[in-house]
Structure formats: structure tokens, C-alpha cells
Image (cartoon, rainbow, N blue to C red):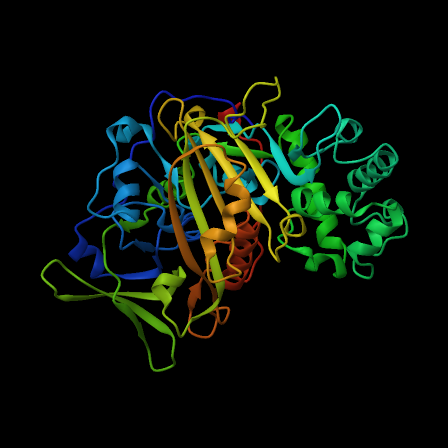
Length: 487
């Protein structure tokens, strides 16, 4: 993986180039195979892939920056988004020091997003660092010789399990047996299944087979398999076994952590795929309004409407549209709930989080399982910092998120706020969870879903791969072949 650099430190941020740009009036007066609306990660991956496969692509965004909901904002843009008309305090540092993510996610080191990055070689545009720690919330009362504990490092290997305070001495051998079972599991080799039917047995039955206790089940399900609630317990065990295996494989990929994160923030991901599309003759227009879609007599989309700076209507012709829910309208999407996210600026690392050497962590994830905090959905905390060139020196950014369950969304984050230490400032956003009402094949308008509150991109990639198959009729080949140019 010579083109996937983990632990590097570039000297300057990626340039925000105006790629694939042409006079807008000329670009709108053409016909395209695909018009993509919105420059979020999903839209940019599909735009890049379709361009590579020879499609003529026009990519529009109403914003004047790449990323859409996945953008990384500097201080000025952050304040403008959440506190219009005000300026950030001078002691926060310079604009160039900040790249604050709107959607908090880490990348699974062995997950599908890494495979897509390697397959398309977009990985060569980015530098990465490993997340220094993954923690799970589980309250333990103070003892004679120790204070109360709230967060614990997630054991990812049998050796970790032996040291973990999450389990008693009798439970640890059972956890080790479970971890070995997961690592040895191969879908096409029933002899590795120990009598478990991945489609016929539930995950609860798997846990029962190994005699695991409720606390152990809690951290495996929510901090290893990364399930968002307990509904998975009574479903077929196959998908959860694969999630556990992905986590453990990711831990071994770069040593010690299953997660990696791009230096300069997640906004570099959609920018990287935008660059891929532009190299393959994709055309980009930022700060371009989208006024609606046009359809032919058979109900198929045939154009995207916009207007120029003088208010004159423009229509770019196309054979299909890919867009995020904000461009699709109520007829193509349905609201399935709400997500609350809180961006918290800290002056110190989150207390009791450590790197592998025992020092304060400069990045970490904390998962608060639903049962531990009396909820129906987990709460997620993602922290990154100046070490990733997303904040000024000695500043940290922790983003807390969950599915809204009450009429007071921010109050639902209080259990996570208590873990963060002193919060210098915070910005809260509540947004709708919107899902497409169909797969897009009827009218050739393919709509992506909003981003979930989870702390990784695996569900995002699964959606992209499913959309790719719906659009092209074929699975995306993620086989990465050796490249002589890259060593």
C-alpha cells in the first residue's frame, strides 16, 4: 500500500483548486450523461467513478465550497454557519489553522472506503493518522483503592481482553474464545462456524453459545460491531459477525487502532474524488443554484434547471441525476427522524483518554451504548485536534452526535458533555434524517440518504456500492492491483 500513507505530516494544506471549471453559461448549454447535485462524499465518489468509466459528468453545488454536509470549515465559515454576522474570538488563532468537520467520522482501516480510495488512487492525494484510542462508556463505582470510572479502552484482541477492566476474571476466557471464533470465521468454510448458521441463528444465540455477560455483550455489540442500538440481537448473526471481523482486521492493519483519519480533515475526501472526476473531464460549478429538474414525456429526468447572475433560466440536459436529499424535494425523500450534533472546542484532551505510550490522546472515539445511558440509541464522541492540522495549536475538537429521542435534543448529549472536561465553545445543529422513497430507477433521479450519527463511513460506502449497482447493473470491482509506478 505504498500510496496509502498513515502517519505522514504534509507541510501545507491541500489547495482548494477550482477544478474542471469553465464559463458557466457554456457548461450549462450542453448535454451530459450524468448531472450530480451536491459535493458531499457520496456524490463525489459516484461522480469520480462515473467519470473514470467514461461518463460525461457535470457536478453542481449551491455552496461556494466542496463537501456539502461533509465539508470541513475554517473559523470564519464555522461562525458564519452557526452565528451569522459575528466573528470568532482572536484567541482562537488564524483561519488557516482550522478545518472543522460538520459530519464526525473516522475511517475503518480495512473498510470499503479505504478499498475505494486505493482502487481509484485518490489515496495519493491524502495523508493519514491513526486514531489513538477507542473507548466505551460503562460506569464502575469507586472501590477502596480507586475512584469511579466511566470510560474504558475497548479490547480489540485476546491480549487486550486479559488486561481489560470491563470484564471479570471468569469472563475474560469466554471473551477470548469469542474473539478467536470471530478471527477464524470464514463465510465459505462451514468448519469455522462452530455449528452457527449465519442466516438462521441470531446474534443473541451466538453470545449465549459463548456464555458472555450483559456488559461484555454491550461493548462488543456497540463498540466493536458498532451497532447503533440493540435491535441487531434478534436478527441473523452473519452481518454482525462480519462487522466484528472487520473491526479486528482493521486493528491489525496499521497497529493498535481500527480507525484512521485524514490530516486537514474529512473535507479532503470529497475534494479528492472531485479531483479524480476533473482529471477525467468532469465539469464543476460551485456556488451554482439548482432550481429543479425537468422530465420527459415518459417521466424520466432530462435536465437540471438553474439561473445565471442576471436571473436568466438555464437548463443543462442529462440522462440521469444523482443528488443529496436537499436537492431532491419532499416527493423523493421521507423524514425518518432527526440527528443532533454538537461541535465542541476544547483546550485540553478529553480526560482519561490515552495514546499507546500513556500520554494524553490527541484523537479518540467514545461510544456511550444506549443501555448504559438509558436511551434507545447510542451517543458518539469523536475527538481530533491540532495534531491532525484541523485546529490551532493545543486546541481539540470533540463532536458529539446521536439520534434525537426527545423534544430537547441538546439535553440528550449531557452524558457525553460530562466526559469532555472544560468546553471553550460549542455549536449545536439538529438536522432531519431523510431517506429516498425509491431506488431512482423509475425516473433516473438517484437520491442519497443523509449521514447517520455513527462514527465511521461503512454504511455510507455500502450505500454508494448499492447505488453503483443500481445505476450500472454491475458490482463495483474493488480489487486493487499492484502499480509499478508506486513501488
